[in-house]
Length: 101
Image (tube, rainbow, N blue to C red):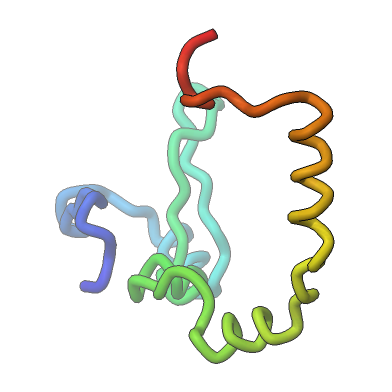
């Protein structure tokens, strides 16, 4: 419950999970499952990955975003003048800057 929709679910009775693996997960240890001495998947306790288990909200809280914007530097009032000087030196830009050249 609460896991991402793209995650496949299986019931515990469909696989044999050794007792030592269950105990390790209960102790919040990750269990690496090997196949021919290569790691194939990891069993973890869902509490160790709350963003995965509970569908974490993306981005920043609004209060933090507003604070960051308030702390940001003000725009340079001379920037537009500098850009006009540059364009006067090199000429105008292309009509469609994204067109193939």
